[in-house]
Every structure is written in C-alpha cells, then in structure tokens.
Amino acid sequence: MERALIAAVNHGGDSDSTGAVTGNILGASLGIEGIPQKYVENLELRDVILEIADDLYNDCKMTEYGDYYDPVWEAKYIQMTYPKVRERMQ
Image (tube, rainbow, N blue to C red; front, side, top):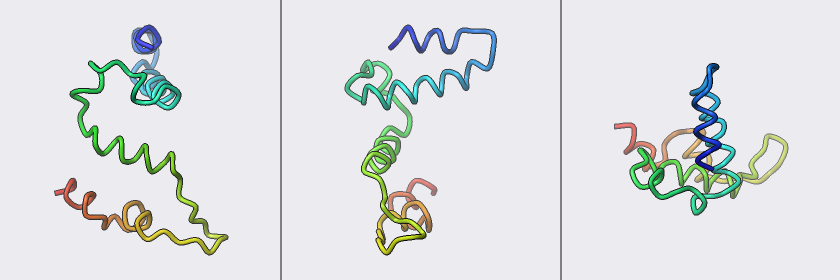
C-alpha cells in the first residue's frame, strides 16, 4: 500500500489528484483495517469520513423511480439538516 501511495504522489504529472484517487481505491479495497495506523490516527475529519464511507457502503435505496424513502439520508445529504452536519458547519 505505501509503495503505491509513494509512486502515485512522486511523479511529474498531476500527483495530488493521482494520490487522492490511489488513496480512495486502496481505502475502498483494504478498508480502514488495511491502512497503516500512522495514516489514520491523526486524520482530519476522520469521524466524518468514516460516517460517509459507512453510508456509501450501506447505500441509500431512494430513487426518483421508487417508493422507498429514507428520512435520515434525505436530512443528511439532500436537506443538510442532520444535526451532526449542522454542528460541523458552524
């Protein structure tokens, strides 16, 4: 993992974007347990990142074509009125 990240950010091109994409792919495939602790322990907004990752993993089944409704998902990601979101924005 570390070799992939180092290679992604140490080249002559758009290395910040390449590093971000590489990190996202590695994180999705390895999970938080597969990421060395030194990268996770002081990660800014760690709780927010983990919450969004959990939400994406568990998926929202709301669509414009179905009847399923999830008020928590709507409050968090559509209306932006979820209490945790409001606290972080202040």
